[in-house]
Length: 113
Image (cartoon, rainbow, N blue to C red; front, top):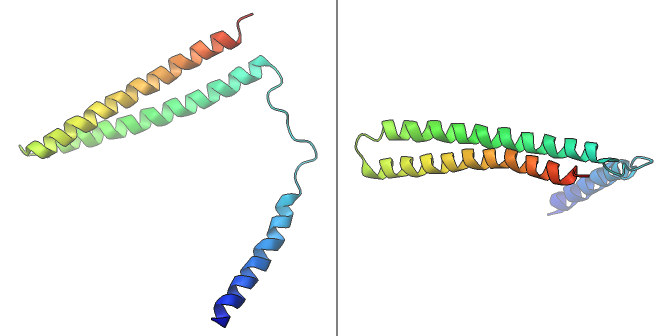
């Protein structure tokens, strides 16, 4: 029991000193985007990242569904599972495409003068 208490206290002290290093932040905290073009750029970057991640996951799910369907060997349970995976992968592709369209709509609303 003493070893656990000593180890816990030593870790607490060790991490306690490292937290003081993180407490010293920057002199000036950035205020965020200064104009609409910067905001639109941030929105585009986030949307592109979401689009590519969703698209990659959907492609992987399509491949897994195809493999499951091909190796089902007539097993109705596996075919049903593969069909559900295929449907959800296509839903993922649709969501990815909608995210790109939503960015266009948000950009046109924000930049309307």
